Amino acid sequence: MTSQILSQRYSLILLAVVFIAVWFGNLDYRKLTRPDEGRYAEIAREMVATGDWVTPRLNGIKYFEKPPLQYWATAAAYRVFGEHEWTARWWPAVTGLGTILLVFLAGRRLFGPAAGWCSALVLASCVAHVGLGHMNTLDMGLTFFMTGTLLAFLLAQQAGASAAERRNWSLAAWACAALAVLSKGLIGIVLPGAMLAAYVLLQRDFSLLRGLQWRGGLSLFLIIAAPWFVLVQHANPEFARFFFVHEHFERFLTEGHLRVQPWWYFFPMLAAGMLPWLTLLPQALIRGWRIHPSPAAFHPARFLLIWAVVVFAFFSASGSKLPSYILPVFPALALLTGLVLAEIGTRQLLWHTIPMLAAGIAIVAFVPHASSMASRYVPASLIDAYVPWILAAGLVLAIGGACAFLLFRRNDRAAAVLGMACGGLVATQLAITGHDSLAPSYSGYHIAQDIQQHLTKTSHFYSVRTYDQTLPFYIKRTVTLVAFQGELAYGLEQEPQLSLPDIESFERAWRSEPGALAVVEPHTYAELEGRRLPMRIVARDLRRIVVRNPGAAP
Image (cartoon, rainbow, N blue to C red; front, side):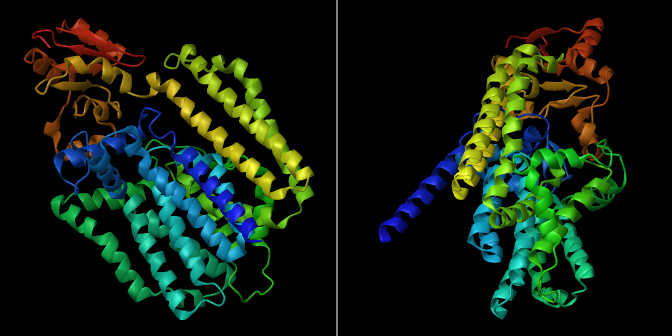
């Protein structure tokens, strides 16, 4: 018996080591892509370069759209390990892994060991969580702390929990909510509050509100979240109006951020993000709503369902939509799906492997037609380089589905679920890793390498009518924007001297700066050529041209 326990323990340790290697192994393989990865990598780089960890700046310009927690984490990694692709992505990867661990631990305590393992495997392999866990965006950090907030609240409501446990879990929920606010703003407290309110109203269980440790919890929340807001407001009196009004209320209520999508936009995102577990989702949602045997008791599964619905409905109603916004729904759905996996019969589960197998076959069948996706900026040559990765991902999905089908038929339930999870994780990682084949179109890395010999400490660099978010990170300096504002418009209102407003201003500056560099799009280059500006092309890619004023030697 002892040897069997040791064997199982060693198997789990080996499985954990392999999973961690697969999870973190490709962080440094891909070049940063625009816009999000370049933006958040560069803000942290500028924090390190300037030593100002209070006022976030993008391209040297005040940038108040988001709070600083991820910037701080990334900047700290730069200070310790250097400025690399993997240090730019380490925070989403670590918080993504942390969210899986939270789901495992909470699922185990709430629903039992089998449900805990199944829930963790679902989250560790669904497309949305794996994909966004390897991209430098703010959504995974928000998801981690929001998940911590809600799962700590659930654990505080467990039957049999002592008064001390209820108090400590409630305080942990407040602390996580504060860190969620520092990750992406007021949404970190508004959404958990909306979920709790919805549950209390539906269940008519107002006693839950009395156990939230309001005095100690709010004090802890303010101790963690408030200092940065006080410091940044003191340094920048214009901060509060922009951050709280423009970036929260106007973002939700208006279409001014130019991210307008139809109301049903997130439904296909949800479906794709839940693969390869999508067909279990209807049962998981029904299971979440099912009446608890004791109506008076707290119903954690129903709370998880409300969690998913509130997040999904909130962002569907918003005037600004991006695919990553609904990431916080997936931990709740993973727990509900894990509960179904642990409860339903093996023979019933067998048929849920068929869509995974079919998806893999469909991807393989699409590969010969992939070149039809080519465009002016993503030529067929780049797509052809990506095809082997997509083919491998499709084959892994198909093989994973087939193996799981056979294992379910043999009643080897644990191995079958693990096979599906491994197939989903590895297939998504292959697709993500192979995306580097498209980097010449989506990243400034290659053109930055081409111009290194022309960069000196004193050479001025202009970005005319365009701004590539990844270029400053790779050239390790900011650029002067010309006739361009974009998302930096508010910061430039405060510091207009940091840019040039029009082409005429640029022309005057350019003619007086031999050795200066400028990045332009082809149509702008043609216009500048018509003005007879002294220019020599030193690099170009699919989207941009870099020119140098040839009046001085490099």
